[in-house]
Length: 538
Image (cartoon, rainbow, N blue to C red; front, side, top):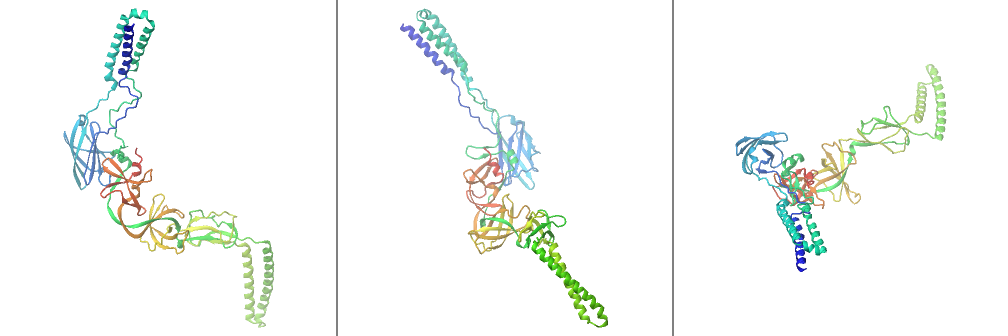
């Protein structure tokens, strides 16, 4: 009895332990995918920056200006290779290539590039290492032979024990059933051996894509830099006048704009050719509209009575003139009396004509200055009240900017304005107001140079120099990127294909540039074009 129980317990322990061996190598978490770049080498000088990238049995060469990162497509490149000197040929995309069958063999290659671009000549050594191809196998394959041997041994032991314990099985069927159940559970090892839950296989080749590295820097291959049009500049410290930023709005030049208003109330009517449309250029004195004043019933009655009186007086004076003309030759009346009668008749007729004009002739609205119609949409039959602005005429070549400042800017040396679209214009100081407006002082500037794309009422940011001097690094505004936490930073080009974000503190300088007061040193390559695109790389 004791011997049979011990034997069954031993079988149970052995068969229960087997799944632990068979389960070796089982993975429940996805395996990390390794990130490896294509074999490459780089070198730089004061004039050039060169990157050589392996492309199987060919070598791609990217040549840029060191300071600006501008691709060079008209250079001559001679390469000293293990097979002798080779001349690189330029291909579309400003990429140079040479045949390199020796790259198929793993090893380290020291290459020498002789670059000639215009008057610049440099010799650039590049070390290129081609690694040995790695074999990526399944970890479960190493444990599979051991699992098979364990299973064979377990099956043989179970069969032997079953033969030896046949008499015991007949006498104690319950214990025999437990042993058989244990054997059946052990068979599940075959089905579960080597099973893995969604572990992706590691790629055999490398990856050559732009990516953000664990230290926060960016790896951007040269082909990606060409697509993103990344450009850089070298930082240099200089002295600048302190600048203040003011909110502003474009207004018309008071001496080159005018308003067309109705002096009396009346009904609008169009001149020949119709009302001028918005944007139509007009000249001073052009008739833009007519205003017909309404005549009340009482006024009509008074005018008719006045017309009757004038007609009666004209008839009397006309008969007097006729009589005087007949008597004047005989000397019955003097020539002076005849002339006075004629003058009286002409005056009465003029008064009669003027009274008719009051009833029939409308008021003509004329352009006070030359320019374009900036505002005004009159409609025929529309009633215009006295002093109503019917048209606003602006000369688009003469515009001003009204900025609001908390301090008086008497005689600002220089100023620039920047629109919401990024357009920058130069300004000249015109004057400051003496009365506060909403606790601020209005300051007027005249726009100098090109005014294309600007319109009256457009809001701008004005950068005015106040005369105080300060030192710093001037960079284009496009260089500065604002992070999710509100921190401003720039990208430093630390190597040919690596960019490092640098937090900086900036101050306004003008419409095109900002001043880096702290955060980066001198003689650093800063990205001035494409910084926003680099910030999107993850």
